Image (cartoon, rainbow, N blue to C red; front, side):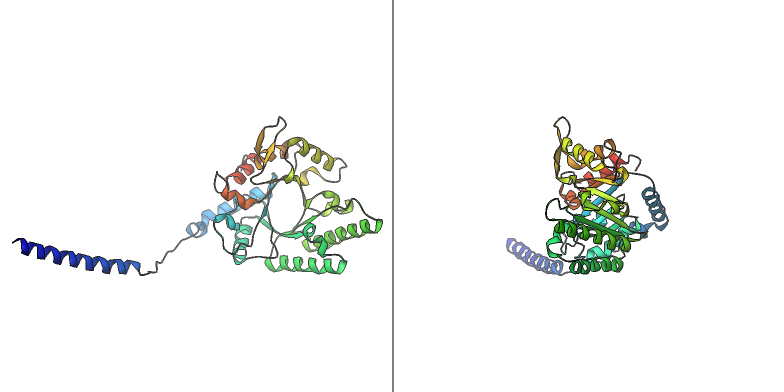
Length: 315
């Protein structure tokens, strides 16, 4: 009897092993799965339309502006921080840091942000390229490419950088000023009445007569690490009256810390929101390295979203 039972058990084990081997082989075969993931817009078009209208009304209302520099052009995104689509919907303006390297991801996301009334700008980084643009011909050709790209991509304007020249011969100073005038002239003409023109850096780079052509000025306060230096820089910038308070944006960098008046250290983006109101009120806040927020311990865009809500509590 035991021999029969053992034979039956052996046969059963062989059958089970064969079946398991067959099943595992089947499981290892790739199988296409049809997933139909609908966006919020597709799930409820009517509710989406109402939401878009609320966003449009908010961004057309008087409020503290939130501007961001976004490190675009990532060819192989590793998380949502690499995508424009993941920025907070209440962001007003986003400038593409690598405007000459627009990826397919960027091209798909730009219209999504524009639908939410977020304005996307092309960066004309003259401060970084000045040494390669020695004459007016080279500068004009470079500006032509930027103007063509903005038209082709249907972007919402330009941001540009520049560094004032405080020393040198009369001829060098005049040539530097002429380049500044040329940049503002070409970009303001291309922007017209409908697009934005924003300067980032020390406003002394822009000729006083051209200040009125700028939509906003982002003051280079992202390198400041204490409130005393911040107050001094803002005071000097506003002292001659050429820069209107409501056009001035304070810059802060994700991940950086800053000391307040009593030398207590805070997250720079969060602390800077207080000074946007108390030192003006000014026009708003500019956030640099915004994609890095996705690696923050608070996860996702918590720092950015909190800053927007602190400046605009009703948002």
